[in-house]
Structure formats: structure tokens, C-alpha cells
Amino acid sequence: MSSKVYFADMRAGVRENLFAKISRLMQQAGIADCLSPGDLVTVKVHFGEKGNHTFVRPIFVRRVVDEVKACGAKPFLTDSSTLYPGERKEAVSALSCAIENGFAFSVVGAPLIMCDGLRGHTAVDVQVDGEILKTVSIGAEIIEADALIAVSHFKCHELTGFGGTLKNLGMGCSSRTGKMQQHSTVAPKVAEKLCNACALCLKSCAHAAITIIEGKAKIDPDACVGCGRCITACLKKAINVQWNESASLVMRKMAEYAKGAVAGKEGKTLYLNFITQVSPACDCYGHADAPIVNDIGICASTDAVALDQACADLVNNARGNQDTALATGHEPGGDKFRGVHPEIDWEVQLEHAEKIGLGSREYELVKL
Image (cartoon, rainbow, N blue to C red; front, side, top):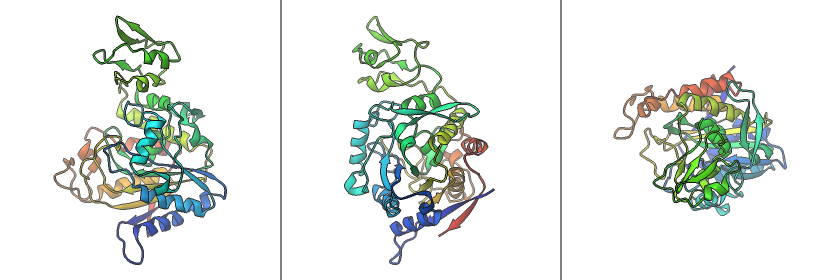
């Protein structure tokens, strides 16, 4: 059974600007049916890394917030801490980065709340009974919210081919433990050249998995449970994830995490993808390369799988930009995602998400 995906192109004029289009798009997609007066609504966004500029603009997110308020609901913006050491590794740094990138209350009109707490470990285990995972670790504030609206930047991704709503839900709503579970099956590793034996990692470890031997931190893989606390505790960035999981398995786990993120919110979710500044890599980098296609538009749906499928098709049907990271597939209909990341079978995330009942790859594109 096909799902409806609503599409607004980037054209604007004196009768209707792009902000008004966002409102009309959300209304047609059924936001009024998703929200009730008094609902606490998590608006899941990506706050963007410092130095990056392709994340969805805060002024566009403000219009999403306004539409939530028009339904009598109470929105808050949220994101989760990163697994790797960087500018968003815990709540204080992440929220500071968000405000510097323009997501201040004065701009977006809603408070910012990290969904996974101060250090990325405030989470709820959600039962999904997936093919790979039985439970998933989701940020507590995602679970506590009455409704969820995901606002995602649709772009390429070096591990999943593309990143859209499924990635925003699956990876973006998970705790640090959840991110470790998706990315790695082994304990973090210590770069001995960087380690100064400060012992901060020992204090952060709740499982006695770390010791100092001959002036260097050592992690016992048998005792490590993969919580990732030591990674962000290390000021020297000497402890890092071993990214050993295959791309296809990461995508399948990510789909099961996405299912966990929306569990219990049947009929209370809405998703928007901004197909703008379609960069060749994730917004987690401190830079953004030239877009591989021109801006296409904005899509909305209550079906995350149909939405990502429609956006992937819109990107692939566009003409690719020369002199960018796009190496092949420049012609309309060419595979843009494999043109940037030829080794990634990006359809795996869509196939598995549909298989586990998260949505349908069949869709009807309804143009505004």
C-alpha cells in the first residue's frame, strides 16, 4: 500500500514565500491530526557541527515550531550527543554549539533540550524484537514526549549512502550506548601516543574495564559493555570507537532503532526532509563540501520510509553538478549516492525499514 508524500519545490514569489510553503506543506501532510492541545512535542533536528553550514536553517525550523504551536501543542527542539569526541559530545558543548549555529530561543521560538541528558546516557530501553536487536537504547526525552516531528537535512552519507529521516530517527534519537551498538561490536581503543595516564577514563567507567598499565590506559574488552563514557571523558581524544561494523549491518540496526524511536507514538509523528544543499557527507563534519545537485525542495509525510524513498528518487532524477564530489551518475536518473560513495548499498536501510513494518517504499508524490 502506497503512502502520500507531499512535495514543495523551491519556487517562491510575492503571493507565497518559502516559509508559507512550509506551513502549507505541514498542514496538507496532516499535522493537525498528529497533535493535540497540550502535547509536548519533540522537534528532532540536527544542531550542526561547528564549521558546518548545511544543516536545516533555524529560521525554517521556526516555521515548524509555529505550526506546532498553532495546534495548541508545546514544542521543544532536541538532538543527542555524539559518539565521537568533538564539539557536541555532551549537553553543555552541544547546546552551546546549537546556539552558536542559530538555534537560540529568540530565533526558533522553542527551548532546546538534549534528548539523552547531560552526558548522553539518559535513556530508555525500548523493546523492538527486530531481526538483529531485541531492545534499543533511545534518549529518554524522545520517549517521554507525546508526539515527534523529525526535521531532517537530506544529503549523502559516507556510511549509509544517504541520510534522511531514518537516520535522524535511528542514529539521532539513540543514546551513546545505542550509537555504539549500531557502529561497533568491540571495545573502544586507546591511542597510546595521546594517552597521558590522567585517569579520567577510569573515573568515568562504571564497569571497572579500564586500568593504567605502564603509564597508559588499557581497556579490558571482556569487561567493557560499550557505553562509550570513556570516549567523551578523555580530554586528549585518545580513546576512540572502533568502527568495525559493516555498512549494511549498521543500516539494518539503524532502521530497528528508528522503529524504537517512534514506538508508542502511532499517529503522533510527522516527518520533513529538506532536499537543500545536498552535501556529499554528513553534517557532523566541521565543514561542508559543494552540493552534488541543485536545491530540489521540501517533502513531508507521516511515513518515514516513503519519505526517504521519495527524496532519494528526487535526488537521483535531478541533474548532477559538475566539479563536485559526484564522480558518476550526473545524468538525470543516475545513482547520485553511489556516484559519491560507490561501495555503499544505500537501499538496505529502506528495504529493512519496510520489512520490519516501519513504512512503505511505495508512495504517491503530491505536489503543492
